[in-house]
Image 1 (tube, rainbow, N blue to C red):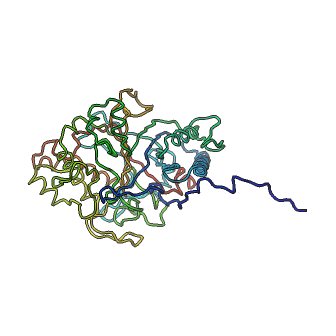
Image 2 (tube, one colour; image 1 turned 120 degrees about the horizontal axis):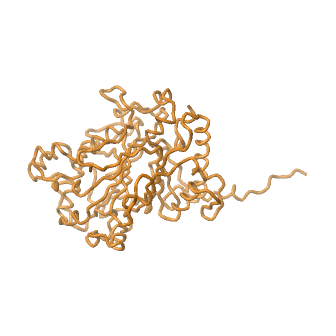
Image 3 (cartoon, rainbow, N blue to C red; image 1 turned 180 degrees about the vertical axis):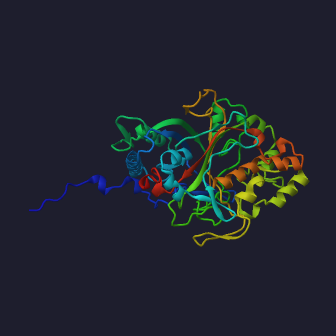
Length: 453
């Protein structure tokens, strides 16, 4: 009589697929994030808890075999995690991005010269589409321009999921995920962790946390606010949809095509920004509303999610008019002529986009760290400090630089003799750290280009 293979219960029930959605090709699209209406404005309900881990690689530079082995291990670790937790906010969502030191120190120049996405300059490929972060005009003198090899962004509605996954990935010893022993998740020997950054977004957490910690200005934060500054950050019409932030999707930004190695990848910017809550809430509601959006906004205080639909876009001519007539330009208005399409556009995938469509994606979250939970480069303070870990995606670092410079609006400020408090809201922000990364597609999220080295 023939014998059959032993019954494998683990192969019968895939717990991660009980609420299954097909994984996107990108890393930055978030399966399972629902959309709700805030007074008829669609808002994405993003995961509640967030953690970012940055690191340097421990691998020997120039050792292609070691890098390929590391690639296999990290891929296996991420796949094992995703067999246990659903790919959605109720499980865990993981994004992995790589700093320029990774590509310059661990990948041969012959490979990067051929494969790295390049920004288009006058219609011709120029510099890589991911370049080093720079200091902007209103940055403090002690800003740290980081040089990490890798960044992991973990997010979930359940904080223990983040802690368990981070422990299993980076701490040696026997580990479990959801009570299930895991064998191939630990990859901590591949890295030296340089920072751990934690925070939250939504569910009224900004006021709750600020009040609990006695942060000045806490009582002024709207009870239902998503972020410390009161207004919603995840408007559906204020965030790039689908694959719009990818290198290849909108013609004219990079040399990438749907067939390129880094198709469905993007430039990611990571920074930490402290917030002067007392100063911000020293303004009345109208003052905050108009500095967040533009000087023509009139929404009532209970409206935390003013419409960000394409027709609300402020283009450069209107921004100039605001400065002339009102002596004030809002944060959104400063940047929208660059972060939104200035004409009807067709993507490389054939999608038609109206003028005013957003091509920049934010996944920022609040924090009370000062500046991080753990920082290998400098001490951290136990005193809570309100801030935001800002994460943004767009087709090139060159575009991000242009948008971020407009956030300071030095030339506009001089042209119209605007005081700092009437030029967006940078007066209330202090950036402490920043770095640009390349976030590859899901298929290349484990040590990209290693297999070609």
